[in-house]
Image (cartoon, rainbow, N blue to C red):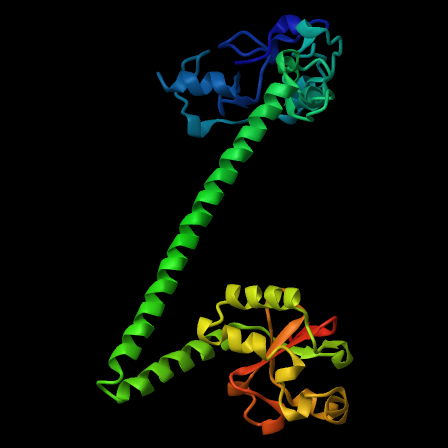
Length: 318
């Protein structure tokens, strides 16, 4: 379908009119032999019913069509046309080849996206602005967010419940193994093997780090700090069987002889770089596990491991 002739300024050459819709050509194409020109949409619809030229009835198919000559395209592009939004107050008459560019920026376009300036900032078509209510929109946004939050909380609760059940199952399994090991001495070795594998799996999941500020070590953490570190250990998947032992080993009163006092720590500081340390997730703290530090002397390590807390200076190894 072409452009209404009445939208154009001045006379329009008859050669620029579509023989099918009698309007100014839109996306024009041409029959190859008779050279009659048509709107692309008009001739496509025509060919759905018959395969010939609408003017002289010569045989033509959709595959035969070709673009109109450049001179015709230039003639069309120079025509001046009234804006689509003339009914909404636009008086512009751009060239036909500039019409689409004008429509994108036309301030009279009722569908032009605009932002609400009353507070909510919602983008909407201009003609919908008069019926817009910021409070209603924002209430809807809040309700959507509350629904999402409720769904997330529900999922989190379900996951927490499932995790709790799994932890209980593990504890029951351990209790079962301990209950029957008296009947079979080999069961003790099995239990120890299971716990050791759990510890290794957890340790291997932690990020290796290096400590750059050993002088920032907090050797006497208070009860509050110990609770924070304990929660981080549990959240990281640390086997519950060693959590309390590790927290006990976070204070210098329980450290081995090589770390027990400030004086001995200063003397042995040159050995610290030999520690294999893993970060406690999200904290300036590390675990130095005995299973990974067999190369250290007995006066530098404890079973199952040490927790060292720092004010700063814990960096991940990339």
